[in-house]
Length: 186
Image 1 (cartoon, rainbow, N blue to C red):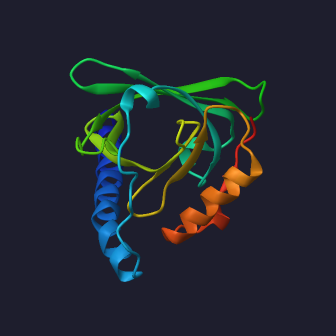
Image 2: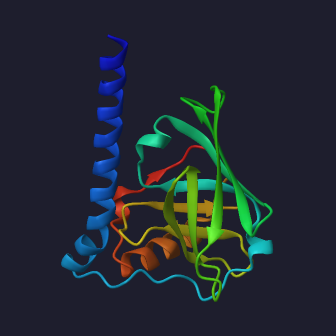
């Protein structure tokens, strides 16, 4: 009985991994098929200025963020050229139970520092591209080449509506479906 339970668990894990790899393999094909241009990143990111805490202003809904409010991401330098990533949120309400996930990031485009890979569970790494950034690092927009992931971040819990609308306009130009964005309660 124990052996069959392990086999079932391993079978589910294998199916999950196979599905994940299949989706990852389709990403570029889907983007090209839709006629979307390659996702543009910002020309340069000063990682020292990027470090610190960011508030999630809006994002595309993701299963791993279901029920999250008061969401933040905090970046700190880690040894070996990597960055610590600490994502936090409150479940259900701003006074709900705190949930967190610890990960790591690494730069994959040292010429710009705008393309990173992030991992919350090894050996899997996902694209983390900085596609818009305030002149004073007061906001950042993080996307994925497939355009299935998107986060609008701010150094403060709120964002001026004119700044937000400007970001939405630039996202539309990059082929994002901004109607999918959910505002995050902070």
